[in-house]
Image (tube, rainbow, N blue to C red; front, side, top):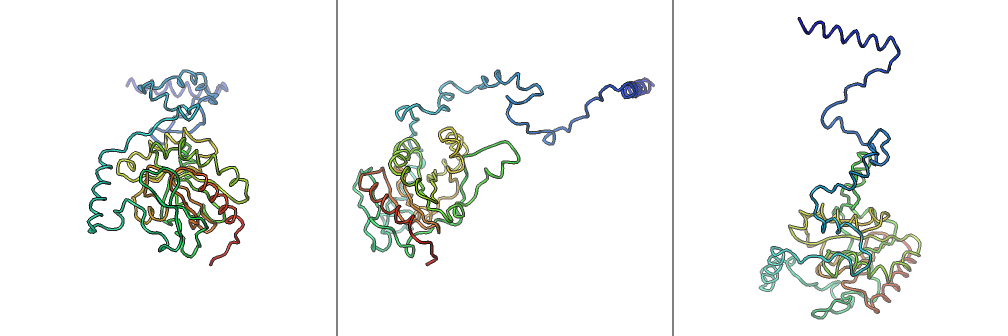
Amino acid sequence: SAAAPSAASSAGTLSAREASGAPALPTEQPQGVAGIAYRGPLEEDVQGGARHASIISAMWSNIPNHVRASFKAPVSLDDAPKSSAPQLIDRVASQVKALAFSTGLAPASWSQSSALYYDGAIALAPYRRGQTAAYNYPQVLVPRSIAHRFPLDMYVDPVFQTSDPDQKARAKAHTLFNRLQGKTTLMICFSGQPMAGLYTGVQRWLDVVTEEFSARTNTQVFKLHAEEGWFNRRTSALTKFHLRRQVNEDELFTTFVYKGKWKYEYMRALHLYDKELPVVLLIDAMGYVRWHAVGLPSDDATAVFQTVASRLAAERKNFA
C-alpha cells in the first residue's frame, strides 16, 4: 500500500540522522493543561518570546483608555480614584434592616449603630450625627479579660496573585489569627468608600501613627478591606486586582480582602458598623483588640493611640 513506503522512508530518515550525528527531532509535547509550563517573565524568555515582549506589553485587547489609566498609581491624593456610591440593593437592604430593628422585632445583628461595649465599664468617645472625626475609642487600654478576640474563623485573601504553581499556596485564603500571635498589630479596616479608602482615611492614619509605631520592636501593620453586601462578595477578585496596583510590593502580603459571610460577631469585634469611615484596631500579641477607633484621625485620638500603643508594646506577655 501507499502507507507502507511512507513509513519505511520515515524510519530510514530517522536512522540516517542518528547515524550522521545530527540532532534528534524534538519529542511531542503533551496536549491540553498538562502541556502548560510556567517559564517566568516574557522579557526573560531566551527561547524567542523576549523579542515579542515590547509588542505584547502594548496590547491591551479591548480595554478602554479610561480603564487603562485607572491601573496607574496616582501622583497625588487629589488624583486618587474616588469610590463609587454603594449599590442600590445594599442601601435598600440596610434601610429595611434599620427599620425592622427599630420595631424591636429584629435580631441584634440588624442594628446599624454601635451598641454598648464592655457593659459601660469603659467610657468611649461619643458620636454626633454627621461626625467624621474618630469616635468610639477608649482613653485607656481595654483589659484583655473583657476585650474582644480577633475572630478565629475569619478567612481573608491577600491581594498577592500569581500564575506560578509553586507560589499559588501563598495566595490562598487563610485565617489572620495565627499571624497576630507574638506581635503587636496595628490593623486598619476600610471599605473603599470615599473617606474609607487607601488614599484617604487609611493613608491619613498611616501618616500620623505608623512611623512611631513601626519603630517599636515586634510590631506589624495590616490593612483589611471588608464591606457588607452581596455585590462586594461577588466582586472580591476585582477588588484584589485594584488593590494590588495601589499598594507597594512589600505590602502585598499585609493587605487583605474579606469576601466571606457577614457575621454579627465580626462586625461587633472589629467595629465594622460604619462603612463610610475607616476603623483602627490595636491588637495585642494574643490576638485581642485592646484599643479601637472609628473615623478619621483627630488630635486627641492620635495622642491616645500613641500612649496606649507604647504601653501595649511594653506589656508583659501573659495568658491571664
